[in-house]
Image 1 (tube, rainbow, N blue to C red):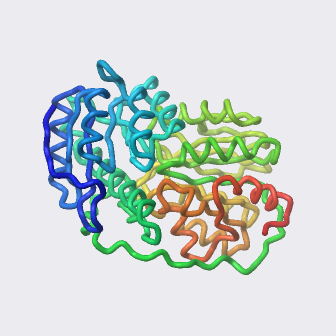
Image 2 (spheres, one colour):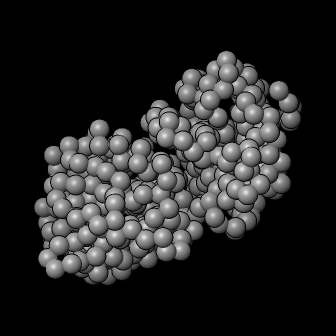
Length: 387
């Protein structure tokens, strides 16, 4: 165990760097992460730990705001340590880190359901140099977004800092000394009455947790086909579909190219592919592409929304859930211009109010709601009477 900063205050002042603890049994991984993060002017690594037992002890000494938590460790693994860390600080933001395997993807989603804020697929040590830029940029973006959210919760009235949109963004954030006061946003004045024929959902950071809750609430409320674009790597999206399938009362699966879009079916965009739709005769089919990332994301919400508008015109019900950046904003604007319904998750229930905040602040939402109210609003829109 390496002790770093021994003069940590209980709560950082506005403008101070985000405080991070790295928990991983690999000295190589700890070393790389420490060097990468310490190179960022607004991030400070305050503690390193090689297992959950040490992490709990050091957490109480250094009070980090963000914890990068490995899953597989001796003495106490990440899943065991997770609820114990949250018990010490309910606002701590925990990023689960694991190698990209099916088992670890499954465990990571279980961790999200138990209170972790996000996850990241770490590169293997033998490939670490080749994956460095993507991994480092993705991790720093998550730290900034989650750190901003945590500070806003601790200091009501401050707006969470919005981070770079994804793992491939190279934008550097300015110091966080200028957190803005939360501003009101306007809702659309029109009240569309056209019944939608398809539902589109976009999400990113915090999305899996939000999707689990949403589909639990949505049971029995619709038979419409639903398309989901969640920012996730390959392997994770297949596991996400399996988890939702256990919750929802309709068939849920990772989309395949050529799938026919039919009622009572949910399609999850696979990692590394944009999911779009195309009409052939009277039928609509899924089309998967590896076109360049949009908003630094693949899958991206934008191609999905553009294609849905081209096929269904204004009969698309769009829901934007928690996530970094503003992926989906342009597609939502175009759909709103046609009279389609757009719903956004509110700031209080979002892990990061980036994507839903972008559509809310653009004034194109019919409603901006807590997560537990969204399914009801969707049902009203499906019945042709959104409020």
